[in-house]
Image 1 (cartoon, protein in one colour):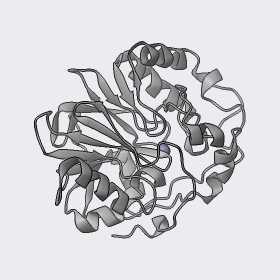
Image 2: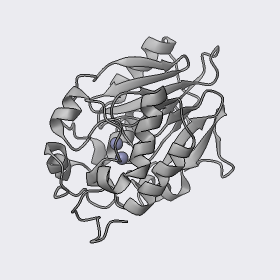
Image 3: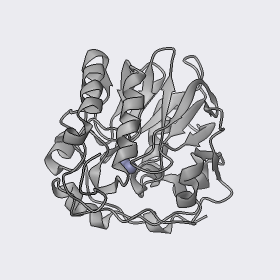
Image 4: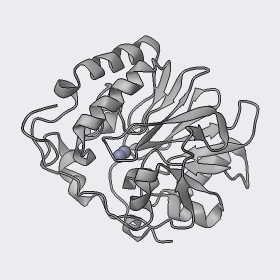
Length: 282
Ligand SMILES: [Zn+2]
Ligand SMILES: [Zn+2]
Protein backbone atom coordinates (compact mmCIF):
# COMPACT_ATOMS: atom_id res chain seq x y z
CA UNK A 1 0.00 0.00 0.00
CA UNK A 2 1.26 3.48 -0.67
CA UNK A 3 -0.17 6.84 0.14
CA UNK A 4 3.03 8.61 -0.81
CA UNK A 5 1.28 11.47 -2.66
CA UNK A 6 -0.49 12.34 0.59
CA UNK A 7 2.45 12.83 2.94
CA UNK A 8 2.53 16.60 2.67
CA UNK A 9 0.56 18.83 5.03
CA UNK A 10 -1.59 21.38 3.21
CA UNK A 11 -1.85 24.67 5.09
CA UNK A 12 -5.54 25.58 4.83
CA UNK A 13 -7.98 25.67 7.70
CA UNK A 14 -11.36 26.93 8.95
CA UNK A 15 -12.90 28.08 12.22
CA UNK A 16 -14.61 24.69 12.53
CA UNK A 17 -11.41 22.65 12.37
CA UNK A 18 -11.19 20.14 15.21
CA UNK A 19 -14.86 20.26 16.18
CA UNK A 20 -17.23 17.31 16.47
CA UNK A 21 -20.95 17.89 15.98
CA UNK A 22 -23.71 15.39 16.60
CA UNK A 23 -25.84 16.05 13.54
CA UNK A 24 -28.50 13.47 14.33
CA UNK A 25 -28.06 11.25 17.41
CA UNK A 26 -26.00 8.59 15.66
CA UNK A 27 -24.11 10.62 13.04
CA UNK A 28 -21.18 12.78 14.11
CA UNK A 29 -19.53 15.25 11.79
CA UNK A 30 -15.88 16.02 12.41
CA UNK A 31 -14.15 18.92 10.69
CA UNK A 32 -10.49 18.40 9.85
CA UNK A 33 -9.01 21.67 8.55
CA UNK A 34 -11.44 22.37 5.69
CA UNK A 35 -13.04 18.98 5.15
CA UNK A 36 -15.66 16.99 7.03
CA UNK A 37 -15.65 13.30 7.82
CA UNK A 38 -18.29 11.30 9.61
CA UNK A 39 -18.58 8.79 12.40
CA UNK A 40 -21.79 6.83 11.82
CA UNK A 41 -23.06 4.39 14.42
CA UNK A 42 -24.31 1.02 13.18
CA UNK A 43 -27.53 1.80 15.10
CA UNK A 44 -28.32 4.44 17.74
CA UNK A 45 -27.70 2.17 20.75
CA UNK A 46 -24.60 0.53 19.31
CA UNK A 47 -20.98 1.27 20.14
CA UNK A 48 -20.05 -0.04 16.68
CA UNK A 49 -19.50 2.50 13.95
CA UNK A 50 -18.31 3.16 10.41
CA UNK A 51 -16.02 5.95 9.27
CA UNK A 52 -17.18 7.87 6.20
CA UNK A 53 -14.23 9.58 4.48
CA UNK A 54 -10.78 10.08 5.92
CA UNK A 55 -9.72 13.72 5.94
CA UNK A 56 -6.78 15.75 4.73
CA UNK A 57 -3.22 14.49 4.28
CA UNK A 58 -1.53 13.80 7.65
CA UNK A 59 -4.80 13.75 9.57
CA UNK A 60 -4.69 10.11 10.71
CA UNK A 61 -3.69 10.82 14.34
CA UNK A 62 -6.29 13.54 14.67
CA UNK A 63 -9.04 11.27 13.33
CA UNK A 64 -8.04 8.47 15.73
CA UNK A 65 -8.14 10.90 18.64
CA UNK A 66 -11.63 12.07 17.66
CA UNK A 67 -12.73 8.42 17.44
CA UNK A 68 -11.37 7.75 20.95
CA UNK A 69 -13.13 10.84 22.29
CA UNK A 70 -16.41 9.55 20.90
CA UNK A 71 -16.15 5.80 21.43
CA UNK A 72 -13.40 5.22 23.99
CA UNK A 73 -9.89 3.78 24.01
CA UNK A 74 -8.99 1.04 21.52
CA UNK A 75 -12.03 1.77 19.39
CA UNK A 76 -11.94 0.67 15.78
CA UNK A 77 -14.53 1.11 13.04
CA UNK A 78 -16.26 -1.84 11.37
CA UNK A 79 -15.38 -0.38 7.97
CA UNK A 80 -14.39 2.79 6.16
CA UNK A 81 -16.65 4.01 3.34
CA UNK A 82 -15.41 6.66 0.90
CA UNK A 83 -17.72 9.10 -0.87
CA UNK A 84 -14.86 9.50 -3.37
CA UNK A 85 -11.07 9.38 -3.48
CA UNK A 86 -9.91 13.00 -3.66
CA UNK A 87 -6.88 13.83 -1.50
CA UNK A 88 -8.97 15.67 1.09
CA UNK A 89 -11.21 12.64 1.68
CA UNK A 90 -8.55 9.92 1.84
CA UNK A 91 -5.64 11.84 3.40
CA UNK A 92 -5.60 10.03 6.74
CA UNK A 93 -6.10 6.54 5.33
CA UNK A 94 -2.47 5.41 5.31
CA UNK A 95 -2.05 6.01 9.04
CA UNK A 96 -5.55 4.80 9.89
CA UNK A 97 -5.07 1.50 8.08
CA UNK A 98 -1.79 0.85 9.82
CA UNK A 99 -3.72 1.00 13.13
CA UNK A 100 -7.07 -0.36 12.00
CA UNK A 101 -7.27 -3.56 9.98
CA UNK A 102 -10.64 -2.84 8.39
CA UNK A 103 -12.04 -2.96 4.86
CA UNK A 104 -12.38 0.21 2.82
CA UNK A 105 -15.28 0.58 0.38
CA UNK A 106 -15.74 2.84 -2.62
CA UNK A 107 -17.67 2.83 -5.89
CA UNK A 108 -16.23 0.65 -8.67
CA UNK A 109 -15.55 3.73 -10.84
CA UNK A 110 -13.45 5.25 -8.06
CA UNK A 111 -11.23 2.20 -7.61
CA UNK A 112 -8.66 3.06 -10.34
CA UNK A 113 -7.76 6.18 -8.32
CA UNK A 114 -7.44 4.15 -5.13
CA UNK A 115 -5.41 1.26 -6.48
CA UNK A 116 -2.63 3.15 -8.24
CA UNK A 117 -4.07 2.59 -11.71
CA UNK A 118 -5.07 6.12 -12.70
CA UNK A 119 -4.46 9.65 -11.45
CA UNK A 120 -7.27 12.15 -11.12
CA UNK A 121 -7.19 14.94 -13.67
CA UNK A 122 -5.17 17.88 -12.41
CA UNK A 123 -7.06 20.51 -10.43
CA UNK A 124 -7.95 23.59 -12.44
CA UNK A 125 -6.47 26.67 -10.76
CA UNK A 126 -7.77 28.91 -13.57
CA UNK A 127 -11.39 28.19 -12.79
CA UNK A 128 -13.02 31.36 -11.59
CA UNK A 129 -13.29 31.45 -7.83
CA UNK A 130 -11.03 32.76 -5.14
CA UNK A 131 -7.81 31.87 -3.41
CA UNK A 132 -8.56 28.22 -2.75
CA UNK A 133 -9.12 27.60 -6.45
CA UNK A 134 -5.78 29.31 -7.12
CA UNK A 135 -4.08 27.26 -4.40
CA UNK A 136 -5.50 24.09 -5.88
CA UNK A 137 -2.41 23.55 -8.00
CA UNK A 138 -0.70 22.34 -4.83
CA UNK A 139 -3.42 19.76 -4.24
CA UNK A 140 -2.26 16.23 -5.00
CA UNK A 141 -4.13 14.43 -7.79
CA UNK A 142 -2.02 11.27 -7.91
CA UNK A 143 -3.64 7.90 -7.27
CA UNK A 144 -2.93 6.22 -3.99
CA UNK A 145 -2.63 2.45 -3.85
CA UNK A 146 -4.88 0.67 -1.39
CA UNK A 147 -4.83 -2.62 -3.32
CA UNK A 148 -5.88 -5.45 -1.04
CA UNK A 149 -7.65 -3.05 1.31
CA UNK A 150 -10.20 -1.32 -0.88
CA UNK A 151 -13.16 -3.03 -2.51
CA UNK A 152 -16.29 -1.91 -4.26
CA UNK A 153 -19.54 -1.18 -2.45
CA UNK A 154 -22.13 -3.90 -3.14
CA UNK A 155 -24.05 -3.29 -6.36
CA UNK A 156 -27.43 -3.62 -4.63
CA UNK A 157 -27.03 -0.22 -2.95
CA UNK A 158 -26.40 -1.58 0.54
CA UNK A 159 -23.80 0.18 2.63
CA UNK A 160 -21.53 -2.35 4.34
CA UNK A 161 -22.13 -2.51 8.13
CA UNK A 162 -24.85 0.18 7.95
CA UNK A 163 -28.09 -1.72 7.30
CA UNK A 164 -30.33 1.36 7.47
CA UNK A 165 -28.40 3.24 4.79
CA UNK A 166 -28.12 2.97 1.04
CA UNK A 167 -25.59 4.44 -1.33
CA UNK A 168 -26.51 6.43 -4.41
CA UNK A 169 -24.20 7.00 -7.35
CA UNK A 170 -23.77 10.77 -7.67
CA UNK A 171 -21.03 11.25 -10.29
CA UNK A 172 -19.78 14.52 -11.78
CA UNK A 173 -17.42 15.81 -9.12
CA UNK A 174 -15.62 12.49 -9.61
CA UNK A 175 -16.65 9.44 -11.67
CA UNK A 176 -17.42 7.12 -8.78
CA UNK A 177 -18.73 9.63 -6.28
CA UNK A 178 -21.41 8.25 -3.95
CA UNK A 179 -23.77 9.78 -1.41
CA UNK A 180 -25.25 7.90 1.55
CA UNK A 181 -28.93 8.19 2.48
CA UNK A 182 -31.04 6.85 5.32
CA UNK A 183 -34.72 6.84 4.42
CA UNK A 184 -36.01 6.47 8.01
CA UNK A 185 -35.07 10.02 9.04
CA UNK A 186 -34.04 11.32 5.60
CA UNK A 187 -30.43 11.91 6.58
CA UNK A 188 -28.04 12.49 3.69
CA UNK A 189 -24.26 12.34 3.60
CA UNK A 190 -23.62 14.06 0.28
CA UNK A 191 -19.82 14.10 0.08
CA UNK A 192 -18.88 16.74 -2.50
CA UNK A 193 -21.94 16.21 -4.77
CA UNK A 194 -23.00 19.55 -3.35
CA UNK A 195 -21.46 21.46 -0.45
CA UNK A 196 -22.63 24.09 2.02
CA UNK A 197 -19.76 26.55 1.69
CA UNK A 198 -18.22 28.26 -1.34
CA UNK A 199 -15.20 26.01 -1.20
CA UNK A 200 -13.34 28.02 -3.85
CA UNK A 201 -13.27 31.19 -1.78
CA UNK A 202 -10.74 31.40 1.05
CA UNK A 203 -12.64 33.82 3.27
CA UNK A 204 -15.83 31.78 3.09
CA UNK A 205 -13.93 28.56 3.74
CA UNK A 206 -12.23 30.16 6.73
CA UNK A 207 -15.48 31.44 8.24
CA UNK A 208 -17.59 28.53 6.91
CA UNK A 209 -20.26 30.95 5.67
CA UNK A 210 -23.28 28.77 4.94
CA UNK A 211 -24.50 28.57 1.36
CA UNK A 212 -25.86 25.55 -0.50
CA UNK A 213 -23.81 25.41 -3.65
CA UNK A 214 -22.37 23.04 -6.24
CA UNK A 215 -19.33 20.81 -5.89
CA UNK A 216 -15.88 22.42 -5.41
CA UNK A 217 -15.06 23.79 -8.86
CA UNK A 218 -11.35 23.17 -9.19
CA UNK A 219 -11.76 19.38 -9.04
CA UNK A 220 -15.10 18.88 -10.76
CA UNK A 221 -14.66 17.48 -14.26
CA UNK A 222 -18.14 16.53 -15.49
CA UNK A 223 -20.63 19.33 -14.90
CA UNK A 224 -23.48 17.64 -16.74
CA UNK A 225 -23.31 14.60 -14.48
CA UNK A 226 -22.86 16.85 -11.43
CA UNK A 227 -26.11 18.65 -12.29
CA UNK A 228 -28.02 15.39 -12.64
CA UNK A 229 -26.61 14.21 -9.30
CA UNK A 230 -27.86 17.33 -7.52
CA UNK A 231 -31.32 16.72 -9.05
CA UNK A 232 -31.26 13.15 -7.81
CA UNK A 233 -30.38 14.30 -4.28
CA UNK A 234 -32.97 17.11 -4.28
CA UNK A 235 -35.66 14.57 -5.19
CA UNK A 236 -34.84 12.60 -2.03
CA UNK A 237 -36.05 15.63 -0.02
CA UNK A 238 -33.55 15.13 2.79
CA UNK A 239 -34.31 16.53 6.25
CA UNK A 240 -30.67 16.67 7.30
CA UNK A 241 -27.60 16.92 5.11
CA UNK A 242 -23.92 16.89 5.83
CA UNK A 243 -21.44 17.52 3.05
CA UNK A 244 -17.71 17.25 2.51
CA UNK A 245 -17.22 20.96 3.13
CA UNK A 246 -19.25 23.42 5.20
CA UNK A 247 -21.80 23.13 8.00
CA UNK A 248 -24.71 20.68 8.32
CA UNK A 249 -28.03 21.94 6.92
CA UNK A 250 -31.53 21.03 8.04
CA UNK A 251 -35.24 21.20 7.22
CA UNK A 252 -36.63 24.00 5.10
CA UNK A 253 -33.27 25.70 4.59
CA UNK A 254 -31.97 22.46 3.13
CA UNK A 255 -34.98 21.64 0.98
CA UNK A 256 -35.28 25.16 -0.42
CA UNK A 257 -31.53 25.51 -0.98
CA UNK A 258 -31.25 22.18 -2.73
CA UNK A 259 -34.28 22.86 -4.87
CA UNK A 260 -32.81 26.22 -5.94
CA UNK A 261 -29.45 24.65 -6.64
CA UNK A 262 -31.06 21.96 -8.81
CA UNK A 263 -33.19 24.51 -10.67
CA UNK A 264 -30.39 27.05 -11.22
CA UNK A 265 -27.40 24.75 -11.28
CA UNK A 266 -25.83 26.37 -14.34
CA UNK A 267 -25.92 29.84 -12.74
CA UNK A 268 -25.01 28.85 -9.18
CA UNK A 269 -22.59 25.99 -9.60
CA UNK A 270 -21.00 25.87 -13.04
CA UNK A 271 -18.11 28.28 -13.56
CA UNK A 272 -18.34 30.39 -16.69
CA UNK A 273 -14.87 29.36 -17.72
CA UNK A 274 -12.33 26.74 -16.80
CA UNK A 275 -10.51 23.72 -18.11
CA UNK A 276 -13.44 21.34 -17.54
CA UNK A 277 -16.22 23.62 -18.73
CA UNK A 278 -17.09 23.55 -22.39
CA UNK A 279 -18.33 26.60 -24.25
CA UNK A 280 -22.05 26.10 -23.85
CA UNK A 281 -23.33 25.35 -20.40
CA UNK A 282 -25.37 22.18 -20.08
ZN1 LIG B 1 -13.77 16.12 -3.85
ZN1 LIG C 1 -13.63 17.62 -0.92
